[in-house]
Image (cartoon, rainbow, N blue to C red):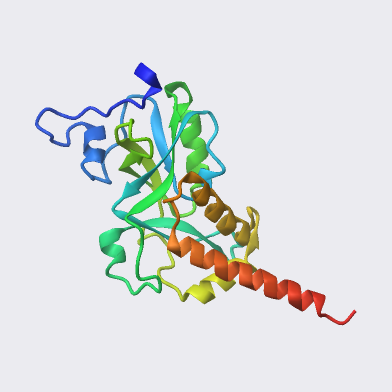
Length: 234
């Protein structure tokens, strides 16, 4: 493979969606899984800083047509679930009453390549890791390196139909929920702050207002907790 460049997805001569990779590139999220053996997985949440095992390429970049929101239950306990991010189709998001009225055109993250000989093992790992309401979709991925062509990636999305989807929530209430939630995966606050840090490290352009605003509110809650503890009577 010349220059270790990601393989350029092939398309049918008439630009139909008969080829599964071409289908994904043409925006068909329900397209069947490509059958070449290897696959690329797009991470837009914890996969950015906690990558899947056995990847042999890591490519920062973005997808379009989606909005990232902390509208999925997870990261807490069954009685008090925390919140993690999912992706919403932008057209659906635009129909909702979101307290954050704008969203970047690009959802930044990282694509990881999994070689064919590890594909089944890693798919099983990802299915377990993302089991809580997420389903598999395919979407075009645009590398930050302009020398690389876009290619198709698999992505796990918690769609609005899944029972863990919460929908819009008052931003301050959401920050307080994340502040309070802790579960088997650790404090929910670590997930939010880890995502903010990881996005900031990808590119000067990779920030996300929704993530940043929640992080700022969370830091204010943490600081208030510290001040309250310091002022407590022994």
